[in-house]
Amino acid sequence: MLLKKTAASLALCLGSCVFAGAADRNAESFTNPVLWEDLADLDIFRVDDAWYYSASTMHYSPGAPILRSYDLINWEYIGHSVPTLEWSSKYNLTGNERAYVKGIWASTMRYRKSNDKWYWLGCIESGKTYVYTASAVTGPWSLASTLNTCFYDAGLFIDDDDTMYVAYGNTRLSVAQLSPDGLSIVKTQQVYSSPGNIGTLEGSRMYKYNGQYYILTTRPATSEYVLKASSPFGSYSIKILANSLSPPAAGGGNPHQGGIVDTPNGDWYYMAFEDAYPGGRIPVLAPITWGSDGFPVLTTSGGGWGVTYPMPMATHPLPSLVGTDSFLGPDLSHQWEWNHNPDTTKFNVSNGLTLHAATVTTDLYAARNTLTHRIHGPVSTATIVLDTANMADGDRAGLSLFRDQSAWIGVLNDGGGGALQVGMVDSIAMDGSWRTTNTGRTAATADISKGGKVYLRCNVNINPGAGRTGTFSYSTDGTKFTNLGTAFALTTDWHYFLGYRWGIFNYATKTLGGFVTVSSFTQDVS
Image (cartoon, rainbow, N blue to C red; front, side):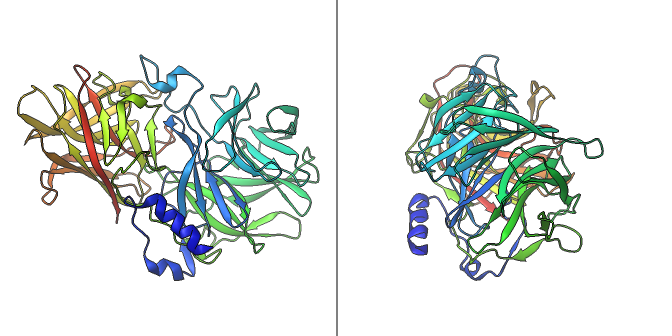
């Protein structure tokens, strides 16, 4: 079985991935974070011998990535539950509309054995809840139902008798019972109101253990509580699970939110996330046991969340999440997500990524078809190989550190002659309403010849804390790289929620018609 699964993973990644070292096969312990990538608001569950992980993505498309593991430590991206953000035209990034920091927040996903179907549901913009389903976890996924109730920060639970429930809410927590097909609401009932000495509670996840019902809920962004009752609708008692614990990644926030999961051997674990800006929110794992009072108890180390713990299961290595993607096609790897919905007529994936300019703008945040990739921490270097031969006059194409304060290195085609410039642009910024306040400052330029390949590179430190920077460089031969511009200071403000990403872009400032081809993207971690 191990060989079959590993072979299937290899087939999916052939030509695009590198494998983790063989030493990982014999690991007796793991180190937190289990995956140093921005995968917040996680929902985690087990089906037979595999675990599945869903996360929030807000305005990135496709949304709600699905990851799979066979040991809770090594993970692979296998799809998305939301193929396109279809709820409003603002998610297309056209005209003056934009949807930054809207879209998919904390949502939920489960497998239902009785009908062999996968479910994802999430409330969008505090309005309606959308239910997507699929017959296979890898899709295709499609919208199956729209509910006129906001299941805020929802946690889907399927009981032993196949009844489907959803725990949700902010401070006043509720449970909904769904119809037999899971596509409509039978009843809702408030089950808990947080007292003043606890305050805000959200991020609900619902479970059953030894005949008791549990709702995990978060006091952002420091602590995790557990509600327990003998019925889905209460009454519930409450106890703290994780109280302002020191994090495993130094400089970050207290682990919180997330969910609990068991192993085939009957062991239990709590997967939370740690606020680790500028890189985002990263998953951390710790064992739990069950106390005599029926509440879970977290296994700490030195009074905090442990940096290392024994492996939950025998190690099952998967293809590495870093390395080179050569864009063999016809589809993108599941690690990629667009900034808003893309114009699908303006890109192609076939032995390289071809990006046609899709927007005439001077604003990176208004440019359609910026393709993003999570940065793998703690210190990472990304390099793209860019063919500039078909750039039009006024075009801009390159590699960005993409967030609400951004910078990039790229090629500027001004004048339409035989020469181009490679430039480093910084000071790109949005305000708290996600409107662009600065389209950037060209900090440095250098002349290059038109028609050849250029190698664009960024090295970035996303360890938690202030003072982290990214530096940019370029090469015309792939061997000798020249630094360009000054170090770019990353913001650690949390209000954008998502961490920095790599962004590959191509936009026009004069007229559409130009295009670039990215022959490869390489990410290395140090």
